Image (cartoon, rainbow, N blue to C red; front, side):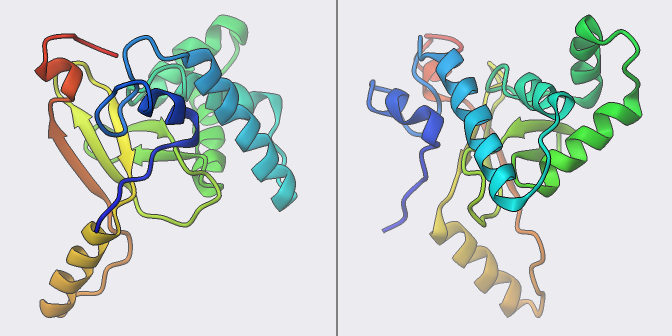
Length: 179
């Protein structure tokens, strides 16, 4: 049976009555961000990579909500503390975070979200709510298996099986709005 992965930082939310990987209304987002930053520090230390203060700040800005954030939104927020920040600064930091599996790029939105499972090899499977804008990451082996089988039967080899699905999260469907 297929199972979706619940991010480490959302596990308490998942047991608090939310349906699936979206955070429950009122979840402790500060804890969510702290957990993501701690995991990033540990992962980078284990790889001998340097998570500089700037890279950490960019990661924190990406994790500010569960909504995908564009590079120029990150730049605008970064300029509050670093007025001299320029686009290349942000793009280099985002590239580092992508290369180390700490964030994902949502292609359709040209935006970034924090990786729910840093350090684990996986493909991006994203549910994007068209109403509140939140995005949730899944890891469902049956999705990858179906994509791989379909591609192979078409004589195609998958390189990066990214899945982005739009719809409405349970909170929006139930009229409760953004978590």
